Image (cartoon, rainbow, N blue to C red):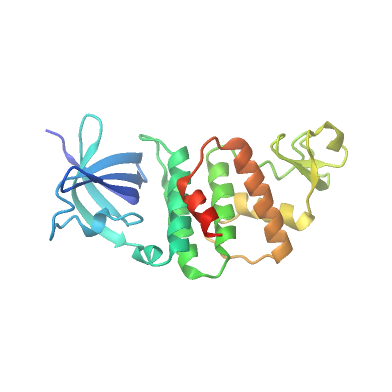
Length: 248
């Protein structure tokens, strides 16, 4: 008989399944991204109803099956229901869930990823940093965690950390110095402040990366780098981004 397991995580998606059930995808700290079926969660008065909403963070008691888990009970830590009150917040939060789902798998510990998602949600609710920049910070840090991050601490061509970085080449994977510019495919100029910002995003204290302020021009530079980088290295289209684009 399978034992119940307690897993701390965040609900990435929650969809209808059969007449009264739900199919959840939960990012868990210890077992990665898992599929969980919540039987009867859509019935009126179900004790599982509140915990089976998208973005909910908590401890989920599950029972392992052959190909998925069954939800037995849940203790909500933070529902993040406020993210559903604003269409932009909901779209950005949904994008974070889609993006993190793209990289994570079952059976692999995702403690750092889970913490990043939590901090990203908190940043959206704080309204202290533009949401488009929160998206960029989340993208760059997550890709770095997964081993696909931008090369920003030295020239991607010569790896000399003493040389000044003046260019960036997406196809080469990162920063390029003046001497190596001729070896890059499509280099473009990047400011020193933008490089320093990228370095802080991928290597700084994760508790601080969503709260620091940068000038508007630097922010736009970093956003442009992230947009080009994800476009080149992420082979998936995200529904939430399409909705954001339609909203302007």
